[in-house]
Length: 160
Image 1 (cartoon, helix red, strand yellow):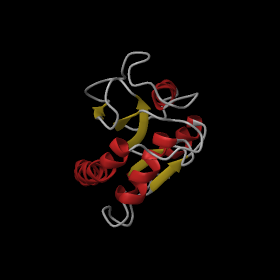
Image 2 (image 1 turned 30 degrees about the vertical axis):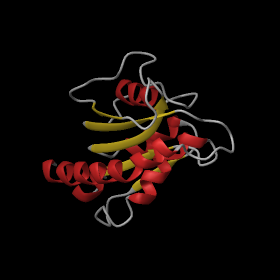
Image 3 (image 1 turned 135 degrees about the vertical axis):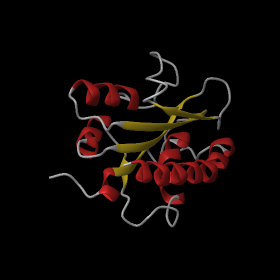
Image 4 (image 1 turned 90 degrees about the horizontal axis):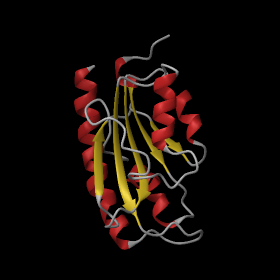
């Protein structure tokens, strides 16, 4: 059974709260409280990205938030609309997870479980050490990214 239109859009936040900048996805999820319609789920993933396939299988659109390895500037935000931009080349914006978001998206596409529309916010991190706090640069990106995610959710819901 297909979910109602409102439920066909979801937000997926990835990260680990105990690994420094890797917590940014979870922090954005917290900042989204009160910014999203109540019926838009925010799915938290703290582990294997393969579990995302279950979350996505009934969705038309997903907005994902994750930390990525720094390509020069901690806190810099990359917004990728994968229907336009495609997946980044191997290693570009690499996830901090063993099986990252890019691999989960590629696998979901190969299995024909991917949402039609996938938008990714990748926030460059600098420190992923166990027990570390998020760096100030990454923490400063949380609120602006949450606002952008909320705008994307509204736009995606209207497009469905």
